[in-house]
Amino acid sequence: MTTYEQAAVLSPESMVEEFKKNGVTHIVTIPDSETNYLYELMMEQPWLEVIPSAREGETFAIALGLIIGGKKPVCLIQNTGMLESGDSIRGMALDSGFPLVFVVGYRGWTRHGEISDSVARYTEPFLNAMRINYYLLEADTDSSRISMAFEEAQKTQRPVCVLVGDEYHGFNR
Image: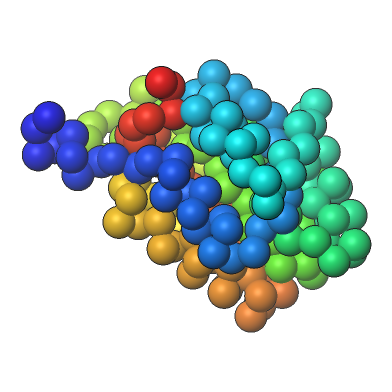
């Protein structure tokens, strides 16, 4: 493994560890091939309930219901679905004023060259337009940013996004 490859390793285990550390009770998600290993790992956790959804926009409504019920959910979606979920994010997360952390796979993003997928070019401008703060994860050393997102969401009573760089390894085992 080269130094470059070592610098960009984000393991699903580090993410699940941060979820547990922050008292997450539920993951509301749409399983996909890119995050299959993370999904399987989350399903193995006895302390965590994984709730599959049919559409990304539904994840925010489900999460809001869980928050009202005293639970601590995380929405786990891809950036393409986040764009599709704009009205749900506005109505369920922003207007309701709930401390929701949502994790977004940053499809198409790379720090090493030209972005080839247009969704990557729109991801951060979308979050900025919605005035949603975000943290970028690229490596296990960044995983503590998940805790930072939870702290900020609780302090501000607003949603906070965690972007997962597309250069992680281990999800496609």
